[in-house]
Length: 155
Image (cartoon, rainbow, N blue to C red):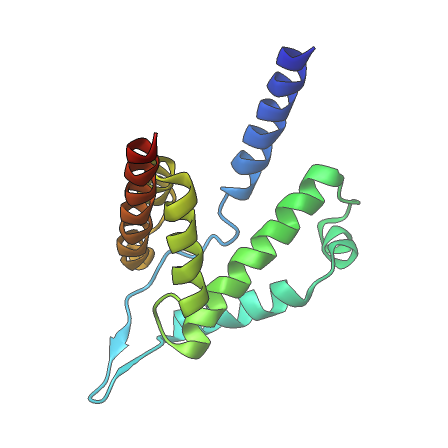
């Protein structure tokens, strides 16, 4: 029974991850236009940001009406996870590039609690823009190893 439940859970998890990995936009990335003071968005990126802002304001029912059919459970889950990802992407446009302090603390705690698993997750899941977070995972991993060594010496 445990194997069956674990297998079903793994299949559902892989299905959700597969659907959320699909691109939500078909626009190819465009280069940034450089000015004297700083980088600004090109017209294609401005259009993309405007579309993303419209998309994150939609409800699942409105999106279903736009598609022409009602969303099932998996499509709703995929839709809401895409909206969350887009909100995070928009934060980088509004507040500047780079991870927030809470993101850094979150990955530090992951490294502290999960150790080598967090390192593997970080190298697999983090995109090139978020590679700074790997440093915080390593700090957490160092804490994890210190805790493990302290426990081993205490025994």
